[in-house]
Length: 116
Length: 114
Image 1 (tube, each protein chain N blue to C red):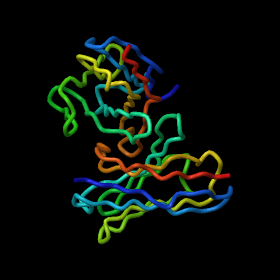
Image 2 (cartoon, rainbow over the protein chains, first blue to last red):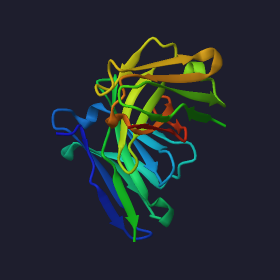
Image 3 (cartoon, rainbow over the protein chains, first blue to last red):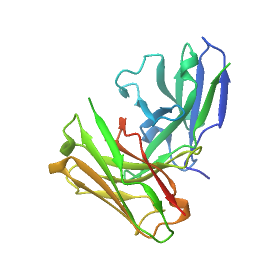
């Protein structure tokens, strides 16, 4: 079972909210981790969006709009990236990441967001 | 402005070696952990290696352990990845990135093993 699992794709309408999930393997608790999120558009390197562990431990990337936000669903053992007021420019691949065991970095497989 | 520029990629035969470089500017390089991440075109991101600011801690993905060596030259604001025993599955675009947040990335350098 992969350490981090993301749905391969998600579609939503302009102006809607999109929730991207990053589910942790069942033997590791989302409560223990900062979840990092990145956006990647075709032909470009990834861009850091934010990290989220709790409401008191979170960071927005420099210049990243506030309509990108992080949260967690402890019952699902998942980190969540919420994109509010979806725009056409938000079409991209989104990756989550954790520092696993403090010494190794693990990425999710990525979610391709399409704005219909 | 933070800038990271990778170089050194190219075509190499299986079993060969390559040394990647990442030139950093616009920030105090010596104070940041640095990372290498790779991506097969059209596929997902794979972390390769990280090195702390003073080179005191170095970490590798299992897939490259024993074959790749990360290093840095803080005097010259440069990060390196020495790759030996290259395999076809090492073919990818290699990015350097800054900090544990990976808050800045270079454009990448392409490595093809064939």
